[in-house]
Image (spheres, helix red, strand yellow):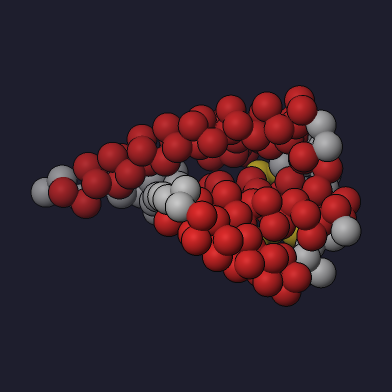
Length: 163
């Protein structure tokens, strides 16, 4: 039941952002659409994953993570744009492997998606604690360096949110 209400609130918030209107007809339509969407999707997510919204500290870290992630997203976009537009195309692609310290499957999924969403990197596979990442320009020679460059910046905040 908690998952239903959390889903409904999130969907209604998304509705408000998309419609950008507080007219009573828009609000009623948003509540109806959010209720239908929550009814369909609330069974897809385990209730234990909603713990993010039970702790103000986790929610605080989540709110901090959004601009933090967006900052690195912009930096990665500029880096890839530079490589594409550079006449010599300075790339050094490769697949790197490193271990993550995250334990929960949800935290690992968020980390993998954060890595994939930043241009220049793509999560290829996650096997237990090992992450395999395709990287457009491999920096460093050791696993610790790869971890620090690719996942280290996200992992600490993700741990505070999901573990």
